[in-house]
Image (tube, rainbow, N blue to C red; front, side, top):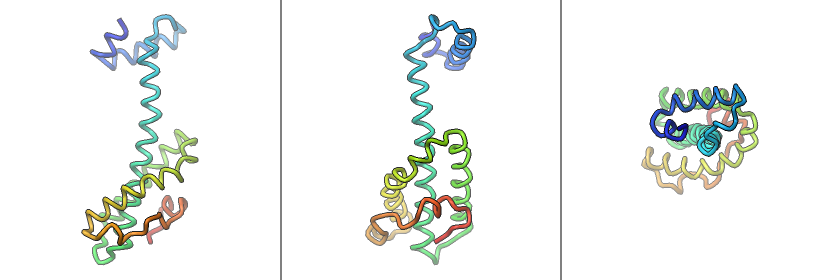
Length: 143
């Protein structure tokens, strides 16, 4: 029955799983879907964090390599991405150790996005990120 609920009404399924856990009624748990959901939650936070890093990097590249087009909307976007990172890291501090790898992964996409948005060639940007993690997260840093 709980698997059917999972497919038809996620909210009821989730609250039922919470009640079953709370009451230590482990035999009734929908283990397969519960495991899948917990794994998905972990991946979601990591993807969210990498997306925020990618957004910052894209705007930092645009800021540095297209100074004549700088605008408050770019700084607002950078600020918003930075503001959204802190709650993620507060809830999942272990993700902080993954940030250096995320920067490497996100930077390649950020270059492509910045090139497309600025109409500059991809090779106008450095092949490797030139900013430190501290700079990327620093609310006062702009290149």
